[in-house]
Image 1 (spheres, chains in turn orange, red):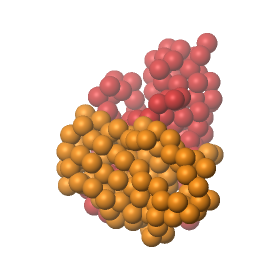
Image 2 (cartoon, each protein chain N blue to C red):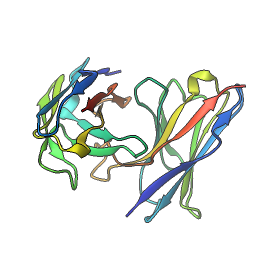
Image 3 (spheres, each protein chain N blue to C red):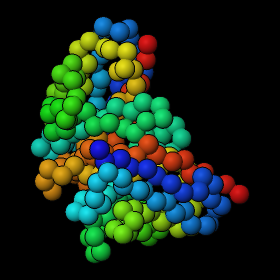
Length: 107
Length: 121
């Protein structure tokens, strides 16, 4: 299976700063089929990005995704207070679907 | 807007059967792929499988012998059954909907909040 490793485990930043989250795959992700999710305590996970760089409906443009092959990045250009959460990547280019271990973005 | 809500017992004894239900509100359960995804304490998310309709299901190999998913369209609910549970099945279980934009779009555009199931005697 394609193992996804996210780094760093925790990112300590302040509102207004830029956040850069990494997701590295053990094998090339077919067709860049990579998604990102945001998860806040007590809430359902929220789809942010799909196809590595396409924003989901309603996602603000401060969120952007990039990368290809085995290395992918989620960037939050200027952190808003509501962006402090845990972020997960998921590949859907091969079976079984797999998720990364998550990056916590904290104040 | 469509919402998902998981329900079921929070505590299951080892060797018994875990049964969870996901209620879909604000939309139809038909013509969608429904999945279960779990997260053991301190670990990452694990995809379990999907149900579309009878004969169109898929489960991950490691759980295939113990998992069954089904849909009750009259109640707008879909369910997960996991037999012979052990402590390793302790997790937060989420139901989720596959994005509708094509067969290859195996990401999830709608999730439930999740429900914690603990396997313990």
